[in-house]
Image (cartoon, rainbow, N blue to C red; front, side, top):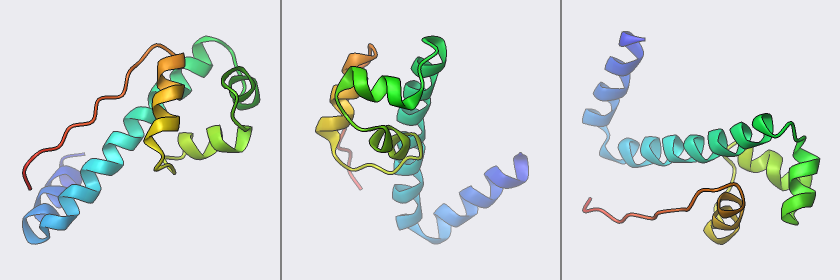
Length: 92
């Protein structure tokens, strides 16, 4: 794993825009893990969770794949499973 970390650090040094994209990807992965973990603990399928929250199964699938941009919807889902969304703006 060390080589991967070194690669990422080097890429960040060469391309500052990469860090922002990488950080966003990691944050999306964190959201996906929380939702997947909730489903596993409660033995829910994507469809069951979607029905409980009031969204489609396809939407849950996309979120679990990290494909989302609507923070209101994500906040609603996270609130439902016992988390809150915190948005932080930091200097570039």
